[in-house]
Amino acid sequence: MSDKITVLLADDHTLVRDGVRRILSAAGDITVVAEVGDGEAAVKETTALRPDVAVLDITMPKGGGLEAARQIRAHAPEVRILILSMHLQPEYLMESVRAGAHGYLVKDAAAGELVQAVREVCAGNSYYSPAVSQQLSDLLRRKLEGEEVQNALERLSPREREVLRYIAEGATNKETAKALGISVRTVETHRDSLMKKLGIKTIAGLTRLALRSGLISDDA
Image 1 (cartoon, rainbow, N blue to C red):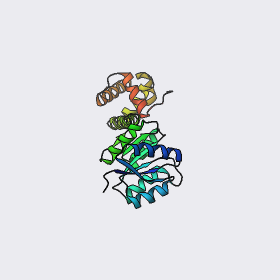
Image 2 (image 1 turned 90 degrees about the horizontal axis):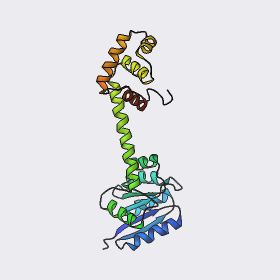
Image 3 (image 1 turned 90 degrees about the vertical axis):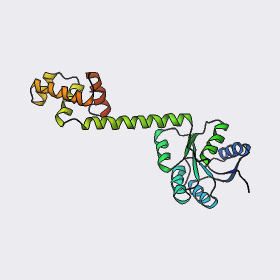
Image 4 (image 1 turned 60 degrees about the vertical axis):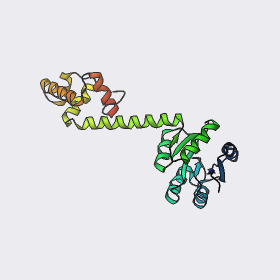
């Protein structure tokens, strides 16, 4: 019985499949058991053959790689999935994670990295090329920052949010008081309160938070 890692390749370009097959076969411990050119065939063959790893392109006819990944996860959950794509846009990366892919490699990766990715994914690990890892890290950071901003704003009263908006737009305490129909002293009280709640001591810091939250726009 062979101990080789079995792989299914799904890409609608024959030359790409030929190149990937040659690289993987040359590794010695990997064998390509099937090649297909569309999403439906990828699901059908993977479900039938149960390879260790399915290497899927994203842009293919009949469903594409992301839909194929979702179907494979549903019908053959033991099969590990590696996305091999030219796309590096954030939306593709996030959709691949949601679809259940275990790794994502861009097509300009070196041959050795492709072999490493297949081995890592087969071993039960995740594998993302450096550029993909950076994109995912940036996406996660922005998501967490957005959640932090929203949580911070939720600590403010409706009136404090109004005062924050005027401050961030550059209005003076007197202008803010006139616009809201309250006294300058009340504006100062709200300003001190919201600064304390947010842990921000400068107008510049308040402005950055208001911009990040969408409370004001860049052209305000």
